[in-house]
Amino acid sequence: MPSQPLIDLTADPFALFATWMSDAEASEPNDPNAMAVATSTPDGRPSVRMLLLKGMDEQGFVFYTNVESHKGRDLLTNPHVALLFHWKSLRRQIRIEGPVTQVSEEEADAYFASRSPMSRLGAIASDQSRPLDDRSTFEKRLKAAEEKYGDGPIPRPSNWTGFRVSPDAIEFWQDRPFRLHDRALWTRDGSGWNVTRLYP
Image (cartoon, rainbow, N blue to C red; front, top):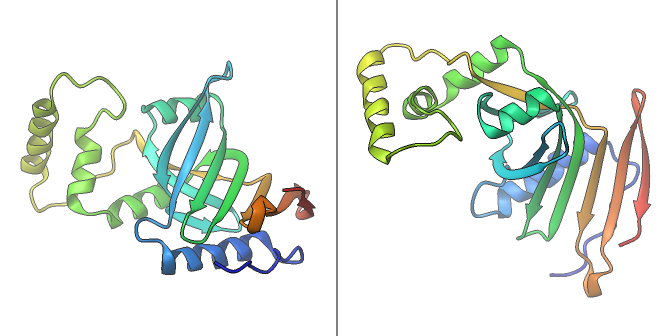
């Protein structure tokens, strides 16, 4: 793959993110919106997992979860995260760090309603991240939810919502030959951004 142009330090980071995401949507075989989400307990014990980005604008980056899950509990007690997008086909990465806030009830309801019926039923049936004695227990709960709601509306569980990451820092990384990579870091400065190129 030929060397890519250097990252444009005059770009708006959200616009640059949107461009790179569009490139990924054209080149990644699966889930271009997949990202690693790192959380931490109040005493600093980190954990990380893969999630899907479900929204992005100049307010931040949005994902959804059960607030009683491992990550949900972390987020409620230590509302800061780090995100990492890695697009192997493009040899690019984006790192994002910042505080999180819960999305509005209306926003969570709208996204939940957009999911497939089985995904909505799964959110109701699952005690996410908690011990499961046998897979059949979950499948029985799923079937019970199907029977309860049938073809009618499937309400969003009160313990299922979204979180918005308001970035303090966004770093763009792209591969260059001989590991002489190009990196650029945008850091929040009031209502604007400071930007600098980083050593590889």
